[in-house]
Image (cartoon, rainbow, N blue to C red):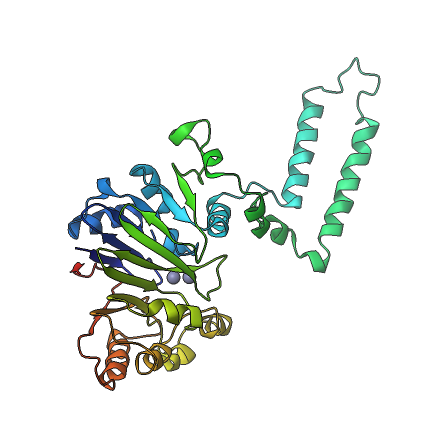
Length: 359
Ligand SMILES: [Zn+2]
Ligand SMILES: [Zn+2]
């Protein structure tokens, strides 16, 4: 038997548990660890028996509780290398300082050194800064001006740059998973520390216990986003949320699903008339944004093979959608299909887990 428990889904956090008698996987850790554990227990799943956390992409609503969950329960994390690097950049505090702040610090240090008598009475140059220092400060000020040029943005812009090694190029220099374990062990202060990381690549299947996992690329504005096909005991579960459109490779992976967790993010009219800034609306509507009720309905009414016993509508926007709209759009699409009889349409909620489904 395969059990699927959607613990929560939406822009405030996504997390699903898939388990067999031998293996227990968490897909995305987008709720707080405390909430994940609470909802797991409510759903009859034991967090102590977790075998893996699989991450679709690094957006906050998919990784919010990741590090605490992985550390607290000593769970291996599976992610693509690019997703892992992007998550590390996100969770690592910025250690760089704005140039103005740095200049101020240097001035204070210099003043302190004068007070402390670094250039004391016995120093022949007492009472005036050493020649090197007098040159250094203006040159730094000049540097500040250079960096304040419009093309470089303000000093805040400089401060907002990711920490060293946190750029997207970080993926190229990411160390092996074993090297990620700091010498200090789990007590280390490194916020990006994870007890165990396994990198997978989209399109290349792997096993977690008796669950066969196939990650596939989805079109979304993240470093290397994926959906998952999970197969065990003759059951096929497909998870595809956070995708701008149903690309051909996604449609291929959706075929033959016994249970489908698929995005029905927004009602296009509600989004257009809704509270989001224009730029965010454009992002959501784009080919690397989120799937609308209409786009999903179009798929369900045409290419969808009708194989799933359960179609779970997920990542439903609380600002730009209504559960009733998402449901009616999907059910209308399925009702029009001859031979598609056994699909149960369920709605994943942000605030409470769905009743576990046994397949
Ligand atoms: Zn996302
Ligand atoms: Zn999301």
